[in-house]
Length: 358
Figure 1 (cartoon, rainbow, N blue to C red):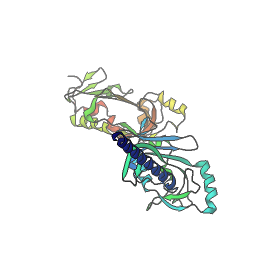
Figure 2 (cartoon, rainbow, N blue to C red):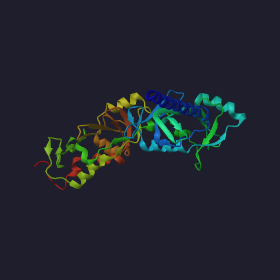
Figure 3 (cartoon, rainbow, N blue to C red):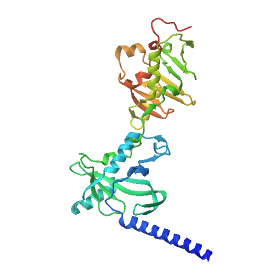
Figure 4 (spheres, rainbow, N blue to C red):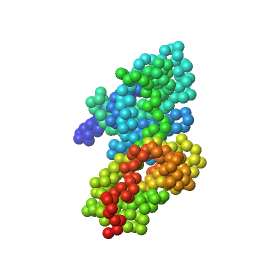
């Protein structure tokens, strides 16, 4: 009797689960709206895949710490991703594409549209949004993003396997959302060069290859004592401006470049710049032993010009420079407005006529 009762209970449970799966799958398959482009809850989005017809691909993934990574390698620009998630949430259908224009729109989209795949953590069983069981990652939406409308206030979109495209916009926003679906890696990458707080710095070395007497290194020990050494002759500096030093070290918490240039400039030109003598080399070592080296070059890459000529004729950009960052992987454009804070010469830290040696 007892065995029969257990078997009956198990059978009932299996029937309930099977029915729930059937209802859930039926609801998902039959009730999916071909115009439902918006994502109501973006907090459970785990991945977003974007691809275009030119074989450009971008994969945005949220890691276990909630940080977004792009193409499995680079830290994504977190504010841009959050803004994009807000876009996905706010999308609204303005109107279906008129029948007379439908074929032309679909033909055009087949040639230029960007594919979008959205993955979310969803329950395998969801009964009326009340009983949610067995969460898993699933591709919840796949659609295509096309041109903008003639009035520049909407974007053509088509759900995968649907026959009818729609004009999509964001309420109370004048403009179109097509540009936000970028498939360029550079548009999603974080532009941070240094993000080390002063408490995590072990040492900072700043070298001026064309002015060695201005090169130096700051060392910070476990007791937070700071030592300054002039690299020309490795001479310790007995007295230096502590306020300027603290401001200098604090600046490494947030230094960014302006733009990636690797795909914008000819390789031969980049190689010519990198073969020249760097204007400045910054090497930061953190307390975990990580080393971050940045090489800065004059923007026009004059390899054999003297410092006197630079001062006389100003043949280089006085606002921007080139830099090699991320372990030498990225050739970028930087602004002196940001980097002047971390490229101070040795003389900047010495007050009055303090000697270089103790």
